[in-house]
Amino acid sequence: MRSLQIARGELEETRCLMLLSKELGRISEKDFLNVNSICDSLGQLINALGRSLRSKLDDRGLSRVTSHKSRITDQVTKENLHV
Image 1 (cartoon, rainbow, N blue to C red):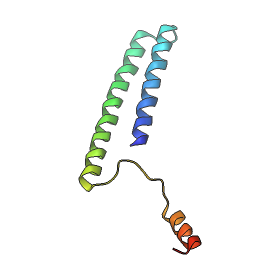
Image 2 (spheres, rainbow, N blue to C red; image 1 turned 30 degrees about the vertical axis):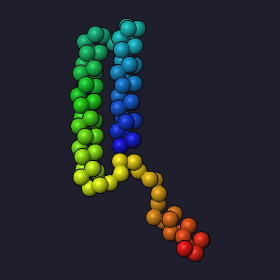
Image 3 (tube, one colour; image 1 turned 135 degrees about the horizontal axis):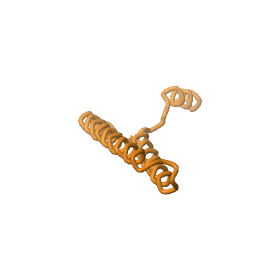
Image 4 (cartoon, helix red, strand yellow; image 1 turned 180 degrees about the vertical axis):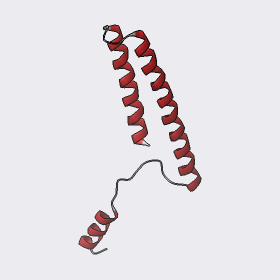
């Protein structure tokens, strides 16, 4: 889920940079509107993917947060601690 939040942030950063580029005269209004439209579509796709993943995780009773634990790391730790 965090990856989707990052993707959404990167998308909005792109949108802001395109707006700045338009205001500085680096791209045309037409190009900006085209990029902005693409950003809108991508934002909707990212949101839809997030909703779908949240629904699947909730249906399975799984956490939305990754623990970042490794089975290998857990095993080595257990062996070292003789658990």
